[in-house]
Picture 1 (cartoon, rainbow, N blue to C red):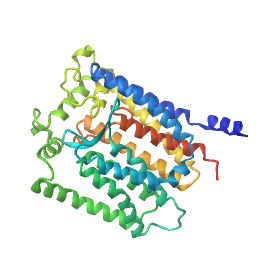
Picture 2 (cartoon, rainbow, N blue to C red; picture 1 turned 135 degrees about the vertical axis):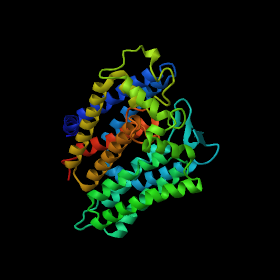
Picture 3 (cartoon, rainbow, N blue to C red; picture 1 turned 45 degrees about the vertical axis):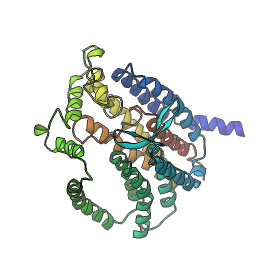
Length: 373
């Protein structure tokens, strides 16, 4: 009997989803090497990919319902890490943000990346119960509370870019849980008023720093932006993307934008620009198609989930990944402000690739149990 169950698991395993994720990660490692061949980032990324694959398979062959059941413990542990990282001497401060914990031999660990998984599980656990009506205001506020705790701690780091990536998780779950239309309209109206107001207040009080203002102004008024100042990142990224042309730059690798250090953070924030320079428009289209197929596979898995909880877990993951892809590509193309959001499976960083792999592992686990009542 056990042998039959194991055979069915291997037969039902989503090999295409796994291969797509690995292919994108390998392509990303290649681009990290192209960006910084002498820095060793690509070696760490390969190590991270190997560890991530093991973790993904471990989660995939674990019953997701057991993990959802103990989601509160994961959630509290994640919150504890977000508190610990704020403590001077423990949390590492890089580029003005205290968001990492040093791990000997592996580099830095970023709790805010991993906290997305417990947050998704908590939201799915709370909203995954069978229901026959639209959400009440109390339930909507409860969902907001689940999100507010990690987001508030992340803003204290301060890492506004990472905090923003949490909101699609709640938005997708609320939408699929039949949130009342008046709540949606009220939220949109509130955002329309609150975002400009918050920007004005932030500028006046100093909460929004001058460099953050300038990065926003680069997008709003690119012609008058200081290309040697705060607009440098955006303009260098646009130049790098344009240099790739249709099939990739013919220039020798040592003369590339990233290797000559014109493009800042080429292995993380602007890895898409590096890919555009090396593989051109065709390579970028193929990469985006790979992402589209990966997200489509995830959505297909959500449609066949055995319960609402599993469906919400996968769709929250889809929302989070799609949002990060949109933001990162928008940053690279100069269409959105630079806010430090990594490109899933592509950007260098052990925390990011591990968190994404765990998320994909959950999706596979849910698929494997789609026939279980």
